[in-house]
Length: 102
Image 1 (cartoon, rainbow, N blue to C red):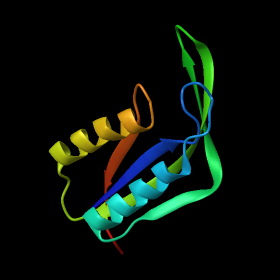
Image 2 (cartoon, helix red, strand yellow; image 1 turned 180 degrees about the vertical axis):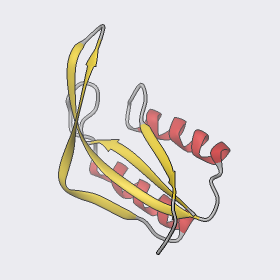
Image 3 (cartoon, one colour; image 1 turned 60 degrees about the vertical axis):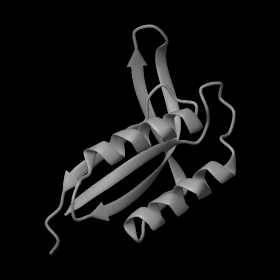
Image 4 (cartoon, helix red, strand yellow; image 1 turned 90 degrees about the vertical axis):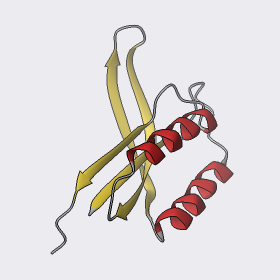
C-alpha cells in the first residue's frame, strides 16, 4: 500500500490566488482515480526554501493525499506534468511512501 501526497500551491508564481475550481477539479480526479482522497486545507502549510537565483521564497500549500495498492509511476509523472501546467508552476511536489496499515 502506498500513500501519495500532492502539494498544491495556494498562489501562482505571480502571487495571485489560484482559481478555486482548480482544487475542486483535482479532488474530483483523485476520487475518480483512487476511490477517495483526503484534503488538508483548513490552514495552508507554508513551504520555505532558499533559491540561488531568487533568494528565500515562501509558498502557502494545501496537501491532497490518496492511498493506492500499487504505485503507477507513469500515471503520476503525466498527472504531475498536467498539474504543473494548470497551476502555472515550474515544479510541483508529489511524494509517495510505502504504508504498513495497522
